[in-house]
Image (tube, rainbow, N blue to C red; front, side):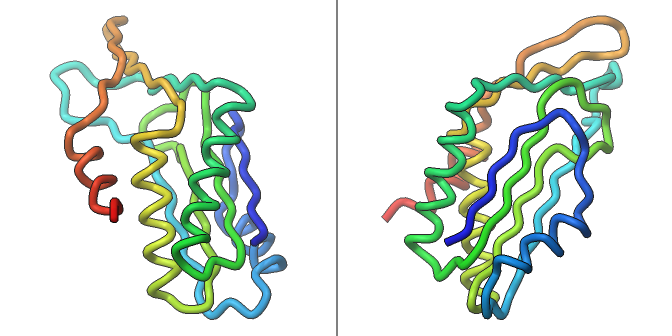
Length: 153
């Protein structure tokens, strides 16, 4: 399986990333794309930025491990994961997961699996910085853990 993992501060272009992945997808019959964006939330004080930190080298290795687990469960021929770090404003893209597989069911399942594990196991730390100067670290959500838990055999 071809797998390209990047953690970066720069934004990405969904269209060019999709074209690049197709060059490695072989005879895949499906390509699923998930792009996550920073949400403003419905707080009393508006969000200015979401600041993400990671552990260089370790984060990429963990994402690769998760992608390899997905490929072991579904017939994934290629994947591309980009996760951004640094200060991101509401509406900016934060993550891209592209999965190419033989059929749509496997592509959708592998992409969902990868996102569920990225939300709960990839070593990222997120801080919400608000327009009034206050900030808080984002805690793990029970709903994310529950979503990830459905994949346990």
